[in-house]
Length: 269
Image (cartoon, rainbow, N blue to C red; front, side):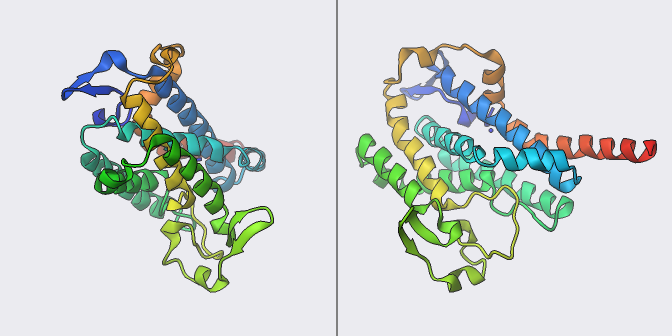
């Protein structure tokens, strides 16, 4: 599935307007780094499998497709936590949205049949901006209540793309007519005749983000476990700190590498 954010994305504490890098929650960087690693692996399988028609990569991608949403949820939650620790969420959201637009333009050129119209960057940018404008209201909800409520709403809306709300036999079917157009695609209501890559609509994923926002209350109050403030895996920490840059370059690099491999394969035949 499918980020070092710019400096304003860093998971650091603010006290009196002064950034205190000593209180950085290194475990969050490392968890984000692991999610980035999984994202790169997942996208590489998709690119090689479905764009360059490699059967083995297709099978591997389909196999890992069952667990990749879990990493996407954690990644989105971490972005929500960082909103509590950022000085300027407006600028932060605009930066992400700008990068998302560039990504959309590039995908329309490289893979026009399944472009990235509302991917993970679009989701995060929209959520950060939404939080910037609504935080004064949502922050009034106690953190435990907010986390539980977001978790429930995430589960209830997780299958909206399949035409219903709820889980198991407890479901509410959504009228099929609503899915005939793509006017509500950012909400997860998308036509079955359209194909998008890296698709992360606001429902249910915005609830993972807001669960992070409420979890971020504990981060800002320095109430995370002490072990989370120590660095243990430098490689993952580096990936986590540079996640935004990695996200922007990994797909073009993967496409370029696999294109060269395909050329070499043709020339050797």
